[in-house]
Length: 133
Image (tube, rainbow, N blue to C red; front, side, top):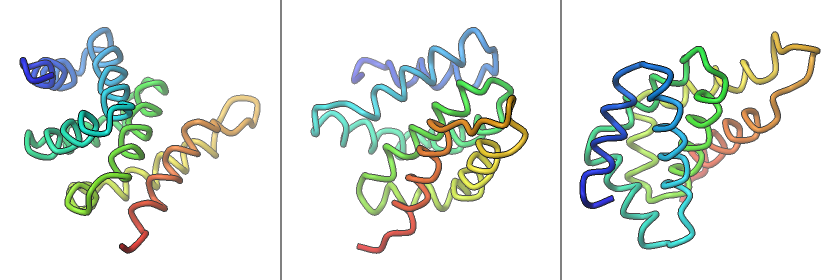
């Protein structure tokens, strides 16, 4: 990651090309959920420091449901992080996008089924952001 992988991922996300966005957002989802606590904290800080949050958050309205779900999972992972990371999500208007993702997961879904992974990730992120230390 220190060799510029985050910059590549961000350039793919900015491209808005589905064939680049989906693998990039999934890679970022996995990076933000690393089992290595040091690496996870470092990635979370880099996302804030590289001003990646607005890029990620804007993908909450991407056409592909898998991309939107990954955005919710990333924001949920980041919401577990330090208070400055949570504040950065709020400052980047992440809460309003998370609320919309929660609504999307529960309304106008095929066969009337809730998109449970999307609903859980968005709801969890909202709860974590609302929690006061």
